[in-house]
Structures are given as structure tokens and as C-alpha cells.
Length: 246
Image (cartoon, rainbow, N blue to C red; front, side, top):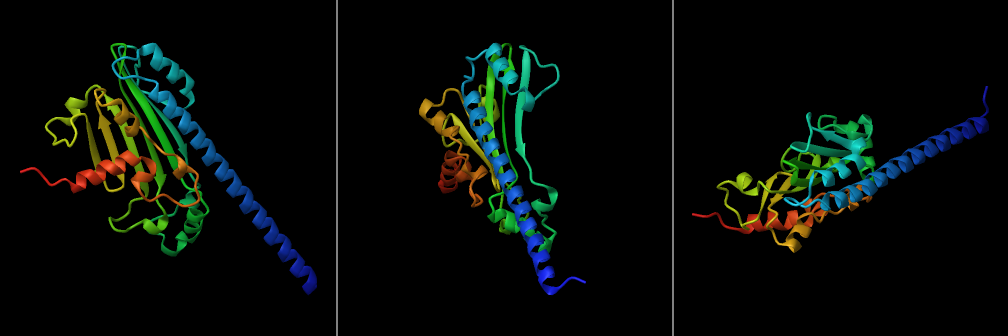
């Protein structure tokens, strides 16, 4: 039979082993998130080298080959017609993600929120038509803190922002009321989509693709679209402050 001293020592060893396992898991999770951030920064930089209506099929091919491991081209991709999307995704194990119906069982996911671990993704892509790049886009997505689920708009697990430059801007905008002639914003709850024309001012184009990546790695969970894409937040506020046309 184990003495009280031996039992205490055994418990200490078990707690120490558990602590070491948790520390190793946290370090591993953080490392993967920093790797995602590093790749996302470089993917955005490569996508920004493409110039809509000017870059050619070989320019797009170079990026497609560089990021082939994460690429998802549509079938029949060629210089005549090609759309490719790149997906950089980092997900937590299911038991750390939480569920809107889990209630008290979300304790561990809540702790993970404050430990800086979260599921996240960066996506980008381009479209080529008749040998010319006609669109390029980039998007970023992070999970919202569990405590934010259900308020005020129901179950919304993700915060997302994306931006696309396209030669088909006029067709997409259609008869929509635009606050600016060469760019528009679409939004739904915690998701914002910016779309803009190659005719947009270069300084504005830079802001429209001015993504931030701290949400992928910082300890405090991000809760605003502006944390991902400041220009998205600014345009969203501008849209809300503009009275409807009569």
C-alpha cells in the first residue's frame, strides 16, 4: 500500500506531466499559427504582384506553381480560362473548438480563447481570361471568442474579411447605389467583402488590400472586421452613416 508521502509524490508527477503536455500542445499550436501568418503575408505579397488587365498567363502560372501545394484550380484550367484559389487553413482539434449547444462543456474552448489558440484561414486567388489576369483576391478569417457566440446576432463563429480587384466591377455592381464610383462593400453580420475596379486610385487600392495579420497570432481574440482589414471597417462605418437615397 502506498504511503501518503508516495501518493503525494505520484500526484505531483502526474500534474507535472500534464502541465508539460499542455505546454507542448500550446507551443505547437502557436508555432502552427505563426507559420500560417508567415505564409499568409507572403501569399498576399505574391497576389499583389498581379495587375488586373495587365498581368499575363505566365505571371499567374508562376504564382500557381509556387503555391501549388495549397492551390485548388477549377477543372480545365488554361490560358483561355482559369480560376485558382489558394487555401491556407489552420484548425484546432474538434474538442477545443466548442459548440453553440455545448453550454458548460465549452469551458475548455473558452480557456483556449484566452491562450491565443484559434482556428484561422487565409485565402487568395486569381482569374485569367484569354491570357490576361482579370481578377485577384485575398481574404482572412479567424474564429470569434466563444463568449461572443449568440450575441447580438445569434451563432456567428467566424470573423471574415476579403477584398477583390476585378475587371468585371461594373457588371458586379450593376445598379447598386455606390458611395464611390470604383469600389463597393457588401456585408453580412461579421463578414465583409470589398470589391473594386482597376480604375480605383492606387493609394486606395493599397488600403483596400491592407490586411493585418496580428489576429492570427495574438493572445487576445479579435472581435472587429477592422482588426483584419481597417479599410473594410471604415467603409462599413461610412455606409452606416450615409442616409438612404430617395
